Image (cartoon, rainbow, N blue to C red; front, top):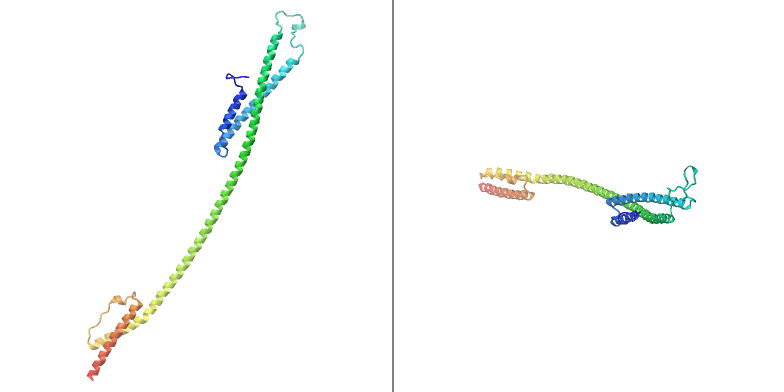
Length: 265
């Protein structure tokens, strides 16, 4: 039946449905799914209301059909089987029955219009529900594919990181082995250098001793050598140069001593 604002309940529901569908955001997010579920619940309520209205319309139609098809329905029967006419009972007139029939037909037309609107809403609800199910299924499938691809991507990253870590460990071990070999080679080189210095040191010591003895015989002043020149940090070249100098000095002293001895003879 008509409401206070002149619109049918089915038309109001259709307006609400269209407003909600026009404002419904795109599916694919959590808030969109919540909005979709709320609309589905609202449509379910409207469908239940449509079914109840449809059942009421069917009952009213059956009542009208029974009233129209029942013979002698308008005749009155007195109490206790008395067929005498009761003057206090007002018989229905043709005009009154016609008005009631017109009102019933008008009500039936309104109910049929409302029923058609409800059927249209039900069809729209089923279409929207089918589309929502398809979109939800596609969304779930896409999310599953995305999660699987993301999982595979991170697995690949972990494998690459593991390979890089193993490679870095191997490189580190190689560096440690190289440093160990270098340390051994340096120690061997230092030992070889020390062994290389030993003959020069012994020769220098012998020449210094010989020089000292000859200077004592000649009565010359002793030569005090710098201790730094005898340190372990002196290079082999310096040792060789010093040995050459000492040898020359010793040779000079020897020549002078020889000349002196020859003069004494």
